[in-house]
Image (cartoon, rainbow, N blue to C red):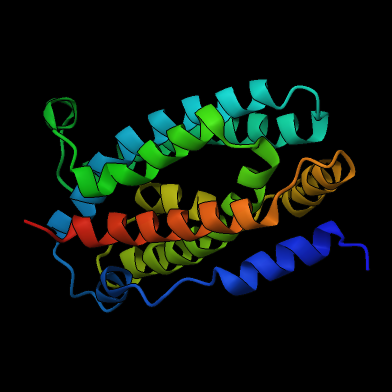
Length: 217
């Protein structure tokens, strides 16, 4: 039976479903101190800059598959939007520009973008599309939960929550772009599902590490 892009993505989503996230659960209950939210904002400055470069590099490496290149170009532009929303979140957490500039990131929080950079250098781009699609589903759910909690439990306004709102809902056409990229990879014989699942599993592990590291003092 011929595998379709829908088959590949559905299997990846099922096999790479995220485990419960204790830090997100504490935020949802209003039990995490604001310092955890401040650390999240500070770490995301570094995550976003790194991921933007990685996505741009993946777009360049995927040039022979325009649908795959377009997927990563869209992600890179999205990181620019995300970076623009971090200022309001940082301010709501009591951070000033000097604190943001002077902050030294935590290794556990930066393992995720470091691994994305490794994939950008050597992984088959369409395999990374599959891995990221599963991880983004988890990230989107976390952002929806955190954005809601910041309003209901912490009294943050819409501007402070805009970073999480950006990721909480899929963008129009996003699912079509993923399907087009994976379909192109399948047609070109460039997709390795075992590799994609391995990358996705590690991304989910590094995602969990990010959240766990936020609570480390």
